[in-house]
Image (cartoon, rainbow, N blue to C red; front, side, top):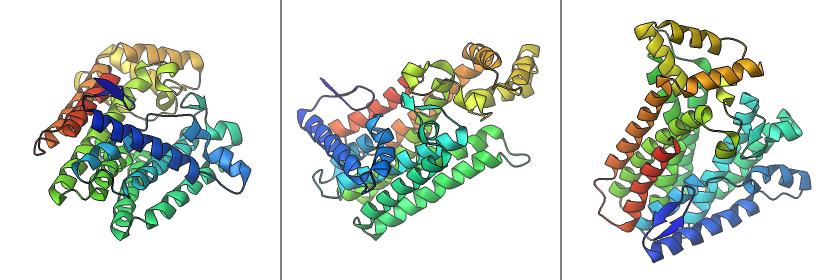
Length: 336
């Protein structure tokens, strides 16, 4: 048994391991090449997060999905580079909106160079992704465009909040489907599509990716509360400090509406206070870490991971399918 990928994913088949490792190495080279510019400063800023590392979760999914067709097809690695560049670009923009100070264990681009450079660097990465995408054909362009629209829509919906009468939890799950699920689904879709897999297989893997992406973000929500910065690569409670209602907070508010317990009401009041104060922020984190709402958010993570696993049922048994199933377990493990 060997280990590959961002979560210590075990791969039992040597040929599969070799393909995945070679694919990820090629993606890494592609990312460095795609982020080069004739302007040295742009290269430095664009490669800031590439060189910081990261899980390469989406490229790994591209490589695994490609196993259901011709795994050596020429469009596979470029499509993985496109997906990762798009993801990296959103991180530059997210950190500006969230005023984040740390990303992947290093100072965020906005902290290092300011908001304008961070936003423009994200735009540069989108442009480079589009350039690569143009060579992959009109269908790939359409798939990416639709996913990008969903991604932006999800971000806007998060900013706008739920409409009157809308369940905040349902609204948030829609947000995650757009912000995270859409691009993870594209990773799986591109891998299968570029490999020439059957349309049925492409659809199955796309559905799997959508659900796995939501589970992945829910696990991040839990990590934002439960982890330290060494484990998560970013400052704990960043979303909490910015007043972004992630799943643990939404489950807490839901509990308050249902039970009205005094200690829960008090915790909500603390969350609604000025959490730029370090002492209040630390207290809020400490209280949420032992609250049942955090465990409920973990159960939400498990539910979506199980839905992702169930989506794979129509696929024939093979080592690639086993690895995708194990990805579901790995995402749940991240949430504790």
